[in-house]
Image: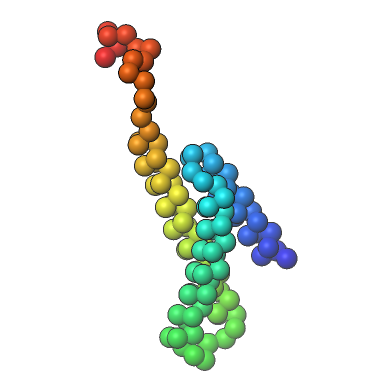
Length: 103
């Protein structure tokens, strides 16, 4: 139950963060779910591949750690996409409100 609440919080944080950066919030919400479970699976699979006789608690720890690292990477990607999008914006106006003295 606690894991579901944490995942809902992460989804909401990514949705609101993407909306504030003029990105698609639904896309980043869905990506956060996919990254959470995929990175959890990959981290646990790598741990079991390295040591097949590892305990279940160790596998769970590796899975949660992998999920947090994956979410951190996705957050970094979202921030950089938001920065790049704000730089690419331009105005279609030929003249703006600035006078020639401000240029």
